[in-house]
Image 1 (cartoon, rainbow, N blue to C red):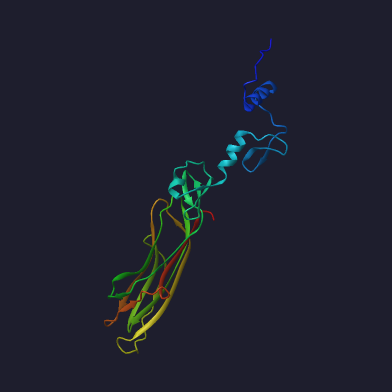
Image 2: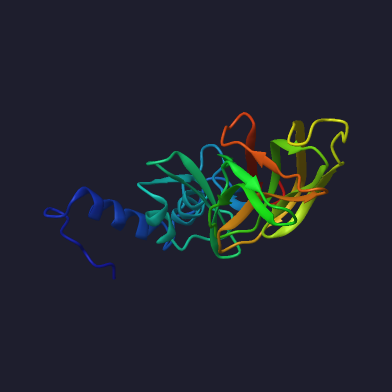
Length: 237
Protein backbone atom coordinates (compact mmCIF):
# COMPACT_ATOMS: atom_id res chain seq x y z
CA UNK A 1 0.00 0.00 0.00
CA UNK A 2 1.40 3.37 -0.98
CA UNK A 3 1.73 5.94 1.78
CA UNK A 4 -0.27 9.07 1.26
CA UNK A 5 1.75 12.21 1.84
CA UNK A 6 0.07 15.52 2.60
CA UNK A 7 1.94 18.01 0.40
CA UNK A 8 -0.05 21.05 1.42
CA UNK A 9 2.68 22.45 3.66
CA UNK A 10 5.69 21.36 1.59
CA UNK A 11 7.97 23.73 -0.27
CA UNK A 12 8.45 23.55 -4.02
CA UNK A 13 11.86 21.96 -3.50
CA UNK A 14 10.41 19.30 -1.20
CA UNK A 15 7.64 18.48 -3.67
CA UNK A 16 10.18 18.19 -6.49
CA UNK A 17 12.27 15.83 -4.38
CA UNK A 18 9.27 13.60 -3.85
CA UNK A 19 8.53 13.47 -7.56
CA UNK A 20 12.17 12.61 -8.35
CA UNK A 21 12.12 9.88 -5.71
CA UNK A 22 9.05 8.32 -7.30
CA UNK A 23 10.68 8.35 -10.74
CA UNK A 24 14.04 6.97 -9.66
CA UNK A 25 16.24 6.96 -6.54
CA UNK A 26 18.90 8.84 -8.56
CA UNK A 27 17.89 11.17 -11.41
CA UNK A 28 19.21 9.89 -14.71
CA UNK A 29 20.69 11.95 -17.52
CA UNK A 30 18.46 12.25 -20.56
CA UNK A 31 21.43 11.21 -22.73
CA UNK A 32 24.77 9.69 -21.72
CA UNK A 33 27.53 12.17 -20.74
CA UNK A 34 30.39 12.92 -23.10
CA UNK A 35 34.16 13.15 -22.58
CA UNK A 36 36.13 16.38 -22.94
CA UNK A 37 39.78 16.26 -21.93
CA UNK A 38 40.07 14.58 -18.54
CA UNK A 39 36.35 14.88 -17.77
CA UNK A 40 34.25 11.84 -18.66
CA UNK A 41 31.02 13.19 -17.16
CA UNK A 42 30.38 16.32 -19.25
CA UNK A 43 26.62 16.83 -19.76
CA UNK A 44 25.56 16.42 -23.36
CA UNK A 45 23.06 18.90 -24.83
CA UNK A 46 19.61 18.28 -23.39
CA UNK A 47 20.81 16.28 -20.38
CA UNK A 48 20.81 17.17 -16.71
CA UNK A 49 23.85 18.73 -15.01
CA UNK A 50 25.10 16.34 -12.34
CA UNK A 51 26.58 17.70 -9.13
CA UNK A 52 29.77 15.72 -9.63
CA UNK A 53 30.38 17.32 -13.03
CA UNK A 54 29.87 20.78 -11.54
CA UNK A 55 32.44 20.03 -8.84
CA UNK A 56 34.99 18.63 -11.33
CA UNK A 57 34.55 21.57 -13.70
CA UNK A 58 34.83 24.13 -10.89
CA UNK A 59 38.25 22.78 -9.95
CA UNK A 60 39.48 23.57 -13.45
CA UNK A 61 38.45 27.22 -13.44
CA UNK A 62 40.93 30.05 -12.85
CA UNK A 63 39.60 31.04 -9.46
CA UNK A 64 40.14 34.53 -8.05
CA UNK A 65 41.79 35.17 -4.69
CA UNK A 66 42.80 38.42 -3.00
CA UNK A 67 46.51 37.48 -2.64
CA UNK A 68 48.94 34.62 -3.15
CA UNK A 69 48.66 34.03 0.59
CA UNK A 70 44.96 33.32 0.12
CA UNK A 71 45.69 31.03 -2.83
CA UNK A 72 48.15 29.05 -0.71
CA UNK A 73 45.33 28.06 1.66
CA UNK A 74 43.51 26.23 -1.16
CA UNK A 75 44.69 22.62 -1.28
CA UNK A 76 43.59 22.22 -4.87
CA UNK A 77 44.31 19.18 -7.06
CA UNK A 78 47.34 19.31 -9.34
CA UNK A 79 46.61 21.18 -12.56
CA UNK A 80 44.40 23.80 -10.90
CA UNK A 81 44.86 27.50 -11.69
CA UNK A 82 44.23 30.63 -9.62
CA UNK A 83 44.88 34.37 -9.98
CA UNK A 84 45.94 36.80 -7.24
CA UNK A 85 43.83 39.93 -7.70
CA UNK A 86 46.33 42.26 -5.99
CA UNK A 87 48.99 41.56 -8.64
CA UNK A 88 47.11 39.93 -11.54
CA UNK A 89 49.59 37.04 -11.42
CA UNK A 90 48.35 33.54 -12.36
CA UNK A 91 49.51 30.52 -10.36
CA UNK A 92 49.39 26.80 -11.15
CA UNK A 93 49.19 23.87 -8.76
CA UNK A 94 51.82 21.23 -9.50
CA UNK A 95 53.27 18.42 -7.38
CA UNK A 96 51.32 19.67 -4.38
CA UNK A 97 52.67 23.24 -4.54
CA UNK A 98 51.64 26.57 -6.07
CA UNK A 99 54.01 28.01 -8.68
CA UNK A 100 53.87 31.30 -10.59
CA UNK A 101 52.54 30.63 -14.09
CA UNK A 102 52.80 34.22 -15.31
CA UNK A 103 56.44 34.75 -16.39
CA UNK A 104 58.48 36.75 -13.88
CA UNK A 105 60.87 39.46 -15.08
CA UNK A 106 63.46 41.39 -13.12
CA UNK A 107 66.27 43.86 -13.76
CA UNK A 108 68.83 45.53 -11.53
CA UNK A 109 71.34 48.29 -12.15
CA UNK A 110 74.90 47.71 -11.03
CA UNK A 111 77.10 49.64 -8.63
CA UNK A 112 80.19 51.75 -9.06
CA UNK A 113 83.25 49.65 -8.30
CA UNK A 114 86.95 50.52 -8.26
CA UNK A 115 88.79 47.23 -8.64
CA UNK A 116 91.95 46.20 -6.88
CA UNK A 117 94.39 43.79 -8.46
CA UNK A 118 93.13 40.15 -8.46
CA UNK A 119 90.21 40.92 -6.11
CA UNK A 120 86.88 39.59 -7.43
CA UNK A 121 84.05 42.05 -6.88
CA UNK A 122 80.35 42.12 -7.66
CA UNK A 123 79.20 44.66 -10.24
CA UNK A 124 75.44 43.93 -10.20
CA UNK A 125 72.95 41.45 -8.71
CA UNK A 126 69.23 40.66 -8.65
CA UNK A 127 67.32 38.00 -6.75
CA UNK A 128 64.74 35.72 -8.37
CA UNK A 129 61.99 35.48 -5.73
CA UNK A 130 61.04 32.30 -3.95
CA UNK A 131 58.48 30.04 -5.63
CA UNK A 132 56.87 26.73 -4.80
CA UNK A 133 57.62 25.04 -8.13
CA UNK A 134 60.70 24.49 -10.29
CA UNK A 135 60.99 26.97 -13.17
CA UNK A 136 63.46 27.86 -15.95
CA UNK A 137 65.22 31.19 -16.52
CA UNK A 138 66.87 33.24 -19.24
CA UNK A 139 69.50 35.61 -17.82
CA UNK A 140 71.69 38.32 -19.34
CA UNK A 141 73.89 41.25 -18.44
CA UNK A 142 75.56 44.29 -19.96
CA UNK A 143 78.69 45.83 -18.49
CA UNK A 144 80.80 48.82 -19.44
CA UNK A 145 84.22 48.11 -17.92
CA UNK A 146 86.88 50.85 -17.89
CA UNK A 147 90.31 49.26 -17.67
CA UNK A 148 93.47 51.17 -17.12
CA UNK A 149 96.56 50.61 -19.20
CA UNK A 150 98.06 47.09 -18.87
CA UNK A 151 94.97 45.65 -17.14
CA UNK A 152 92.92 42.63 -18.17
CA UNK A 153 89.78 41.18 -16.61
CA UNK A 154 87.40 38.25 -16.44
CA UNK A 155 83.65 38.98 -16.42
CA UNK A 156 81.27 36.28 -15.19
CA UNK A 157 77.49 36.02 -15.26
CA UNK A 158 76.70 33.81 -12.27
CA UNK A 159 73.47 31.97 -11.50
CA UNK A 160 73.04 30.79 -7.92
CA UNK A 161 76.76 31.27 -7.34
CA UNK A 162 77.82 29.22 -10.38
CA UNK A 163 79.27 30.66 -13.59
CA UNK A 164 76.70 30.53 -16.42
CA UNK A 165 78.67 32.61 -18.96
CA UNK A 166 82.09 34.24 -18.97
CA UNK A 167 84.27 36.56 -21.05
CA UNK A 168 87.93 37.38 -20.69
CA UNK A 169 88.83 40.97 -21.52
CA UNK A 170 92.36 41.02 -22.98
CA UNK A 171 95.13 43.25 -21.70
CA UNK A 172 94.64 46.87 -22.70
CA UNK A 173 96.75 48.73 -25.20
CA UNK A 174 100.15 49.13 -23.53
CA UNK A 175 100.95 52.09 -25.80
CA UNK A 176 98.47 54.25 -23.88
CA UNK A 177 99.80 56.54 -21.17
CA UNK A 178 99.80 54.93 -17.74
CA UNK A 179 96.42 55.51 -16.10
CA UNK A 180 94.51 56.02 -19.36
CA UNK A 181 91.08 54.37 -19.51
CA UNK A 182 90.33 51.71 -22.09
CA UNK A 183 86.52 51.10 -22.24
CA UNK A 184 85.15 47.60 -22.87
CA UNK A 185 81.48 46.72 -23.40
CA UNK A 186 80.67 43.14 -22.38
CA UNK A 187 77.31 41.41 -22.94
CA UNK A 188 76.62 37.88 -21.66
CA UNK A 189 73.56 35.63 -21.66
CA UNK A 190 72.49 32.13 -20.70
CA UNK A 191 69.16 30.36 -21.34
CA UNK A 192 66.96 27.53 -20.07
CA UNK A 193 68.54 27.36 -16.62
CA UNK A 194 66.60 25.43 -14.00
CA UNK A 195 65.52 27.61 -11.07
CA UNK A 196 65.35 25.69 -7.76
CA UNK A 197 62.05 25.77 -5.90
CA UNK A 198 61.55 26.93 -2.36
CA UNK A 199 64.23 29.63 -2.07
CA UNK A 200 65.48 32.93 -3.46
CA UNK A 201 68.07 32.55 -6.23
CA UNK A 202 70.68 35.26 -7.02
CA UNK A 203 71.85 36.29 -10.48
CA UNK A 204 75.06 38.36 -10.39
CA UNK A 205 77.84 39.85 -12.48
CA UNK A 206 81.30 39.54 -10.97
CA UNK A 207 84.57 40.91 -12.28
CA UNK A 208 88.15 39.95 -11.54
CA UNK A 209 90.76 42.44 -12.73
CA UNK A 210 94.35 41.37 -13.30
CA UNK A 211 96.93 44.10 -13.69
CA UNK A 212 100.48 44.44 -14.89
CA UNK A 213 102.43 47.36 -13.55
CA UNK A 214 99.73 48.55 -11.13
CA UNK A 215 96.81 49.03 -13.53
CA UNK A 216 93.23 48.80 -12.23
CA UNK A 217 89.64 49.13 -13.55
CA UNK A 218 86.23 50.49 -12.67
CA UNK A 219 82.48 50.27 -13.38
CA UNK A 220 79.69 52.81 -13.02
CA UNK A 221 76.30 52.76 -11.26
CA UNK A 222 74.26 53.48 -14.39
CA UNK A 223 71.58 51.09 -15.66
CA UNK A 224 72.44 51.59 -19.32
CA UNK A 225 76.10 50.82 -18.62
CA UNK A 226 75.87 48.20 -15.89
CA UNK A 227 72.86 45.90 -15.43
CA UNK A 228 71.63 42.33 -15.05
CA UNK A 229 68.29 40.96 -16.29
CA UNK A 230 66.28 37.75 -15.82
CA UNK A 231 63.05 36.28 -17.17
CA UNK A 232 61.61 33.21 -15.44
CA UNK A 233 59.08 30.82 -17.02
CA UNK A 234 57.11 27.81 -15.77
CA UNK A 235 58.94 24.54 -16.22
CA UNK A 236 58.08 23.13 -19.64
CA UNK A 237 56.98 26.49 -21.06
